[in-house]
Length: 121
Image 1 (cartoon, helix red, strand yellow):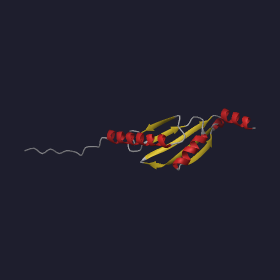
Image 2 (image 1 turned 180 degrees about the vertical axis):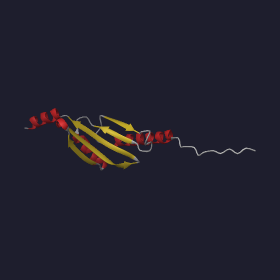
Image 3 (image 1 turned 135 degrees about the horizontal axis):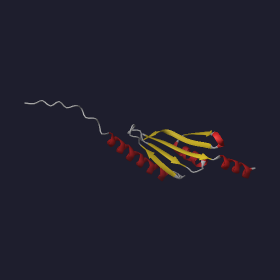
């Protein structure tokens, strides 16, 4: 008779990562179908070191008004910061939705801001 001692197996993190991707993809489909403003692009991130923490990042090309409108529709907070060189970064970030962190963002180059100010004057 032999006794075989088995160590507990580690969970397959790839399974968690796959489920997180599918959850984020499903949420992205819902967001895009319900939003009145369309992002230029979006990405989904599920890092191997955090397979249960998916993120969706929606990019609105040089369009802070669209980020604000998107944020209003999803009850997200909006922040704006001026960066070195005068560019302005606008970001909407909300709490977790279905376990997914959603961020919408845009970056206005300084020269675009100056040109808009000249037109308005």
